[in-house]
Length: 179
Length: 177
Image 1 (cartoon, rainbow over the protein chains, first blue to last red):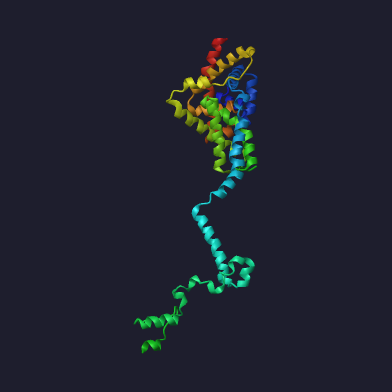
Image 2 (cartoon, rainbow over the protein chains, first blue to last red; image 1 turned 90 degrees about the vertical axis):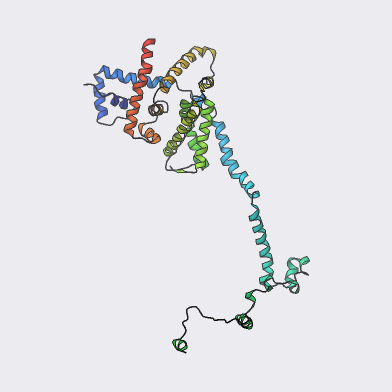
């Protein structure tokens, strides 16, 4: 009995596992019909490959396309666009950056005081204006932070408010409550 | 070896190893070299843009083949209604050869036309399998991975495709001789 054609097809592709492969080989030795069948299948594959396009035709633009992709993704992508990105800073972040610089500069004078001598060392032209007497602290504006608790309470009392103060986590003594 | 699609050396490696394979697979679907080249480029761009890490070179190859196949099939479907047959034939590449090769070339062209007609007559599920097997020389395991089917299924489809092609091409051969 002859071998299943599907098995022959797999044998032709070298995809048949043992022990089937040996069995097929042994069968082929004395079966011209199966040999012909394999030859026919092989001929189909050969004709297909003959009809295939030549490698030099298919590969004619291989290098061009690589160069193009290389420029697009690996050269431009890394060098030029990095520089370009530096110029493409958005407006809000630019403003933020500027504000940060100003803050650090002004803050330097605010936190470490400003003696005319020090300023004169760093910025001679700015020294005259930057004298302590000329600097008005922004925080001098009337905010609650500038008053002590006592002052605030006295003010509210003056206005006729009845202020009750309790400390977080402290329970009033029972004796006091009993009064 | 692990492959990172945005690494230049890895990209070059994968490109060199697979360009021919991709353009060939696409070519046997679209039958137009310019289109095949454009789609091959597109496949590699997607490979880069996807920014993926593949466990091995083979995995990158299977991924690229899947993308290439889908790009090509989409292209054909898009253009089907436009009846591009005439255009396609016009764009069939003829390898520039000397005149003395003219006869040989004519036979090649005839064989190509017949094989193409036979392959185009195959149902799509058989067509990709036999093309990947005979043109690209992929083994059953690779074909299974590219198409997302089992190896047994590949075996069955290869056989069925062969049978149909034999019927389509073999009978003509007997007529000739």
